Length: 170
Ligand code: S3P
Image (cartoon, rainbow, N blue to C red; front, side, top):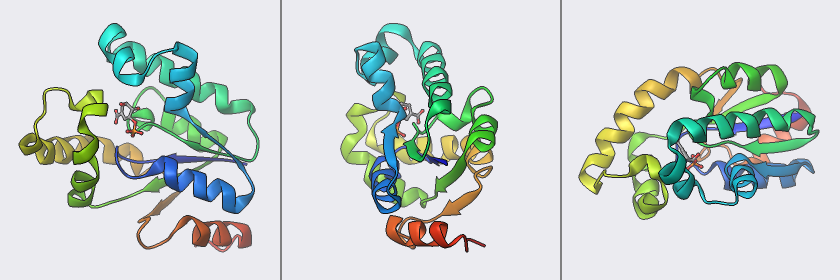
């Protein structure tokens, strides 16, 4: 089975995904890292040199390439479910898990790493709250199409893996 971890920037998708993979005995991959390796450039450089539209195409390609994987947890970028038919595709090809956090928690987690996120170019710390609120409002529609929605503070990766193994997630 493939498991796609989705959620806003700063929700800890990679960390949680790695822990979940380990607990399940699955492999782990990260779409952003896959894109960077293939492009030979970091995400901020891709945004700067090629623009967001080109990045979204690369992101979709990287996602489609996960089709052949088995027993793998895949952490996706925060925007991945919200472009093209990506969310529908993930739901058809694997189990989707949305890591849902409150806006104030996202803000606290994103603030220290703002410079590494091209989506936040030109936004200062005062504008961050507004950005998160507006972007989340648009993206929530896609995120909530996930098969499982969890607050990672309430259910850690080990607990989720136990539930997935037992098949008792209700
Ligand atoms: C993006 C989130 C980033 C990365 C890119 C765009 C977004 O991934 O894919 O900077 O649109 O939210 P993370 O969610 O891992 O930060």
